[in-house]
Structures are given as structure tokens and as C-alpha cells.
Amino acid sequence: MTTNGAPPFTLGMEEEYLLVDLKTRDLAGDPPPAMMKECEALLEGQVMPEFLRAQIEVATRPCATMQEARADLARLRRTVAAVAARHGLAPIAAGLHPFAVWESQRATEKERYAALARDLAAVGRRLMVCGMHVHVGIDNDDLRIDLMNQVSYFLPHLLALSTSSPFWRGRDTGLKSYRISVFNELPRTGLPERFDSWGEYARHVAVMVRAGLIEDATKLWWDIRPSARFPTLEMRIADSCSRLDDAISIAAIYRCLLSMLWRLKSGNQRWRQYANMLIAENRWRAQRYGTDQGLVDYGKGAVVPYADLLDEIVALTDEDASAMGCAAEVRAARDILKRGTSAHRQVAVYGDAKKGGASEKEALVKVVDFLVAEFTAGI
Image (cartoon, rainbow, N blue to C red):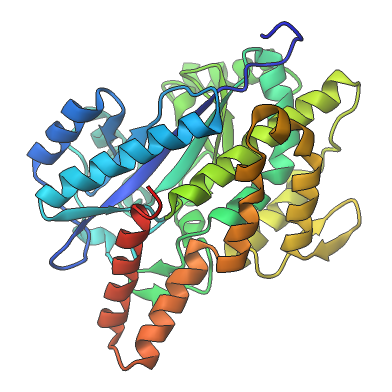
């Protein structure tokens, strides 16, 4: 911890991407091994394969500031895009591909993924989803659990901003994050359990490990979890963000919310905790409507427009954002509302193409082209 007792609040970001064949705009179900080898040579441990061969994951270094995180993530995106282009491919950052079908996908040839495929069966084979994970450094075990309990209230707010998966198998689902529906089919997903201490959490994990249900806590795929690898609290609810600026803004809000909650705790205050059944309603609203229909403010007992809730979050975290030098990144979330989330914009691209006389497939290809362009926008 720092001298005033505050956690370090360092930041690490992980993004999962889908690889698209530029000729067909479909997923590249069998990308050349040379592409991954080239990425690994250039990015030195910051890139890795994912469950499906059509996926790739990147991870920033531990960062002290949002500006450092943005620069590192921009470099990772640029490098992956450049290498993919040399192989006739392009990465997209979205929760789902607009029209790909899971039956055509192939799992990465690693024993870890083969074991997952055997265990998860059909629900695993459908798992062509991509998310963004944000790690924030909290180097006290019990504090990590306490802040997880409190910040869970805000997970739906973060999901709403990140939504980027309105299409599934070529159809507009009506949901802004259909990725959540697909991911919900897995065990040990959704909102985290509540624990009174790190010891209680560790005992529950140990029960599952001893019973042979999981190898370790990395198999807890909750919307937020204590990382099993790092002294961090890992937010996992977000869809992959199509634009870099959106990813950075959402990560900044999450980091500042944790700082705000620690600041309250240091003053003998805390955020009121609500039952998971209530938070789950907001999670559903964010999954279904994104930012469109508002979320429930349980203090008021009423649905409140998302823009008002975002203004409240900006105000709540203003002191923390200023201290961390990321006030601009937090306020940039208002830009997401103005232009729409990736899900809004994908649906708009599709609708405009259809109005212009495009076929279903042609309109969906336009959506893929939009996502390809968004991947490197502003970097």
C-alpha cells in the first residue's frame, strides 16, 4: 500500500478480439499459425490465443495512469491489426460477430482448451464471445473482497456503456449485449457471491477444488472476481469495446469507483449493498436496453434515465478522477451516450444499409466493415 494506506490502484486491461476474413467478412475459422507467431514475437508476452482459433487476446502491462494504459493498448491494437492485415485478416472488438455461426468454429489446439470443450460440451462450442477485463491493483485480500461486494452495484452501469453485441447468427436479437446471454449458459458466471472476508472466499474455493469441480479460482467466471494470478480486482462484465476511447473511459470509471469506495471506507462510510436479485434486474436492463431505458436507482426505488445516473457517477468520482489525472477519460463516457454505444451504431449501420436496398447479408457485411474501421479509430 501507499503511505496513506490507499491501495496502489494500478491498472491492467485485457481485450479479446475476433479475427475476420477480409474476403468473406466471416470469422477466420482457421487463421495461419504464422500470424500468432508474428504477434507473439512483436508483443513479447502481451498476446495469447483464446478458446477459439478465430480469437486473439491482448493484455497491457501494469499501468500507473490511464494515459499509460491507453498508449499500451493502442500499440497492441495497431500491432495486431497490422499483422492480421498481412494475412488477409482484420481484428474486430465486439462481444459477438454479426453473422458467424458457432458450428463452423474450431477450438485452439491446447490441452487447457480441449479440457474446457469436454467439460462444457455444447455451451462451450457456442462460446464465440469476446469481453474486456479490467484489473485494478488492490494489495489487501480482505479489502479486495469488501470492495467487490460494494462495487457490484455498478456493474450494470459499466455493461450498459460497453454493449457491442446486438446480432447473433445474422439476426438482430433486440438485446444490446447478447454476449451476456451466451456467456450466462456457462457455470459459475453472473454476479459474484458475497463474502464477509478473504478467508471465507478462500474456504469456498478450496471446497470446490478438493471436490475436483475446478482446478483453481480462474474457473470462476463471475462478472467481477479477485484475480487468481494478480493482487487485483478484475471486472469482467463488459463487452469488448469497438473503439479504444470507449474501453479507456469505462476502465477509468471502474478504477475511480473503486477509489471512491475506498475513500468512503477510510472515512468509516460505505456504499449500501443491495441483494443480488435487485442488481440482477439492472444487469438485465443493461443487457437488454443498454443505455436506452435507464436503470433502477434502488435508493429512490425508481427507474432513472441513464444519462442522470452517469452524471451522478461522474460527480461521485470527481475527487478520485482528479487525483488520478483521468477526469477527461471519465467524462468521455458522455460522448458514448451522444454517439451511441457500439451496439446502437451497429444496428444503425444495418438499418441504413437495408433502407438503401442492401440484402440481409450485404447489410451485415456493412456492420463488419464498420467494426473493422472502429478497431483502429483514434489510435
